Structures are given as C-alpha cells and as structure tokens.
Length: 185
Image (tube, rainbow, N blue to C red; front, side, top):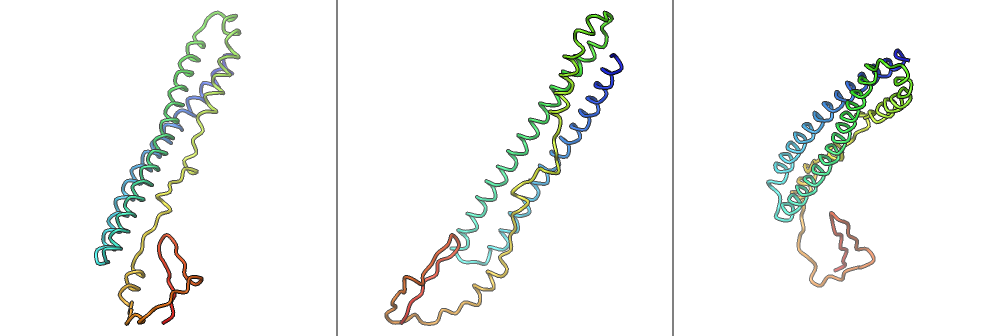
C-alpha cells in the first residue's frame, strides 16, 4: 500500500510541476497580450492621422473597444491563472498531507487513511488540468488596416449635389460603420 501511495504522490508531484509550467506560459501570454495591444494601438494611431474628424472619432471608439477587449482578456487570463494557482496550492496541501501519512508507522492507521489520501490525491490531480493550448484571447482576433479606406476617401469625388434631391427611402440603408442614402435629382 505504501508503494501504491508513493506512486500517487509521485504523480501529484509531476502534475504540480506541469501546472506550474502552465502558469508561466499563461503569464507570458499575458505579457504578449499587452505588447500586442500596444502595437495595435500604435498602428491605429498611424493609420488615423491623416483622416477627417469623423475618422478621428472612430479612432477613439476603436481605442475604447481595444482597451475593453484587452482588459477583458487580461481579466480572463488572470482568472485562469488564479484558478490554476489555487489548484496548485491545494495540491501542495494534499501533497503535504499525503507525505505526513506516509510517515505513519502504525499500519492500522495507514490502512484507515489510505483510501482518503488516495481520493484526495486523485481529486487534486483532476483539478490540475489547465490546457494552455485552448486558451484564446479576443485580442488575437483583432486586426487593423485602414489603407484601403484612406485610398477610398482620397478618391471620393462628390461633384455638385442635385438642386432638389428626392430621397428614395426603400433604397437607403445603414450599418454600424456606414449609412447609404439614395436620391434622385
């Protein structure tokens, strides 16, 4: 039974070490997230410099969304890091308890606690299962390229508006980014 218990302890030690490595990966991902946010913010600033006041307002809105997304991603990563760290701390407690039980010289006492300790070890191992590969951030999905929009704006030729426009409502539409109005002279 002692050898069986030692095998469980060894598995728990290995799992704790693995989870500690995962915490380091998550912390690096958090650092990358901040660097990506900074780089994307710079890109937004450069692409919005030469555009009109309307585009400048959109730039401010994009900054807000970027910050909200970054903050939410950081919060999600911190929650995961906290849960993983808590699991590691609980595993350390279980490990300490198991090691104390292993020091027990009374065989009857060891037999009484054997199942409980094994159950605690298995429970601790199950909680140590962070999959860093499945951790995704909305920040990673965000892209920015206004070069084509700038060119489109530079090529706009409004010409003279009609004297008395008649708006054709059924042909008009709008989205979050644009409004389309059709009229006949």
